[in-house]
Length: 91
Image 1 (tube, helix red, strand yellow):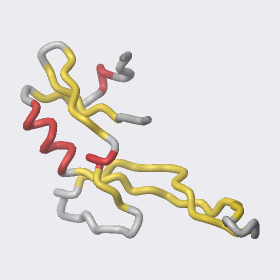
Image 2: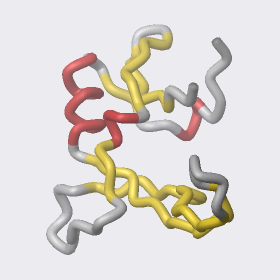
Image 3: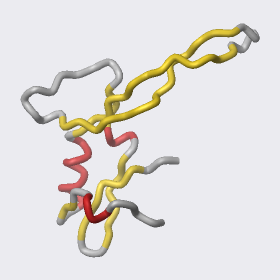
Image 4: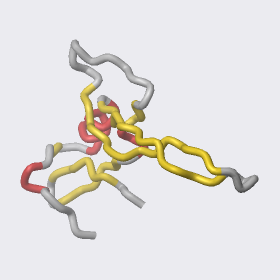
């Protein structure tokens, strides 16, 4: 697996530190209504995630939003050399 932008990524000495960093963050999505067809064949619109921003939940000004999801749904700790990185697992 090729890791991209490693030189700008946050790095950690232990897996536990990396997991804590991931657990302290959410992804806040923007939603866009897109056309879809129901199982009955009728036209409708459904929300689709189009853009996500990683936010730190430990900062004082953080407020929850209805489109927040835990970063742990998308990121996993991976070891690269002697350091740990939070890597987005997009499958």
